[in-house]
Image (cartoon, rainbow over all chains, first blue to last red; front, top):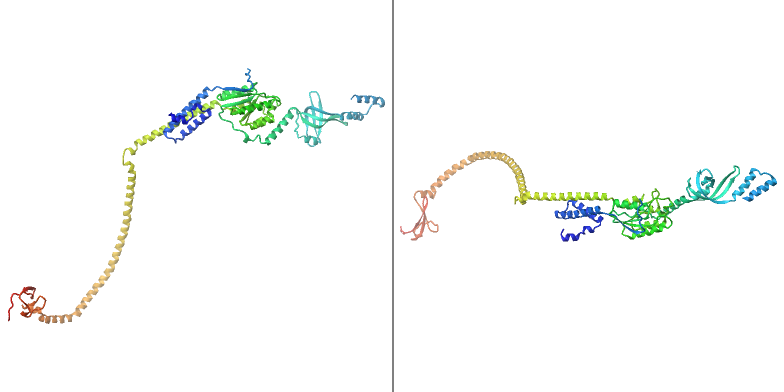
Length: 78
Length: 453
């Protein structure tokens, strides 16, 4: 990706999961429509792959974070 | 009470034993002067519209009391009495002397315990509903992929861990903010309100309000009016998961979504990560196949262009137009002669017909003419004969007189330059041109000499 292209699009890692997924869906729709020029298609495809990798990575690595803002969480008694 | 016994004792000593009626009268007076409030459970309820009163038994573990309530009073209550209900009645005993039966004449009746609570909750629910707090349009939509989820519940007990576990299993991506407060007792409602407001102020996109199972009284904080107002006006969507009963609390009714249990509430808040993974797999497949299609299409276009006529014959670019032109010309050619041909044929035919007609006409005329000619000639001949004879005679005479005849004998005529006939030599001079007319032809002469006679 050229410097100009990275500027006009937010870095994938800065997007929320939801934003990244929505952009990916949009790219899929655009490519499926088959109305784009070859160069545009390739650029979008690359971006799509980057988004895909990021989303997959986030799903696999996710660990629940709990923040206690009121009260005290008692451990589960087994 | 002691007074009556004393009375009876003394009466008996004075007048002897009482009649049954009298005895019951005494009892009646005694009983009917007492007004009491009694609490007990209803059984044997008999509510027949044909009777003037409603009958039931009020009991506890050790005793049972037959009661009646006049229909007019009963109908005014507006309560649906059911066997098993705990009620509080106010009234007095009454004695039916004829049968020696005692009953409790109920003047007032209210629900006690859970029955009363349920009625209160139902009334509040009706009121809030009429205010529009439960309208579907008020309910906020749930976020599809929340980054942060707020959890308002007791930090102790099973419910909180059920929710955390469910969220972890389904959607560990979301951060959970726990607001742990009491969920039972008189102070619970205000604590829940505080927690909800804090959740609203946080970055959470959705709020889970849950508590584990309990009795109807235990769940009463979730029927609190202020809590209901807080939930209804909260700027973030609330999902409730209260108790395990099929009962619906008022908090359930005003929330954006009601789930039947805390676990169900957690499931409603977050998507399943397996579904998300499947969604990504589908997107991946789609990306791959569409880019492949695009490349194929491009390759095909290039191939077609490469092999097309455009690049192999320079005339190809205008060949089409030439072809067009040629075809048009051919059509034109084909069209015109046919047109003219037709015209020519027609013309020819017309011409022929005209010719024939003319010929026919001419023939008739010619024949006529010839006939007339013949006639004329013959007639002419006949007419001319005497004249011809005369003419011949005159001609002969003329002939003999004609100068031509004279000339024929050798004589000639001479003319001067002015065309006058020369009769004398005196009319000319030497050098003059004289024209001599002979019998045949003429000659031009010049005078060389004049001879006198």
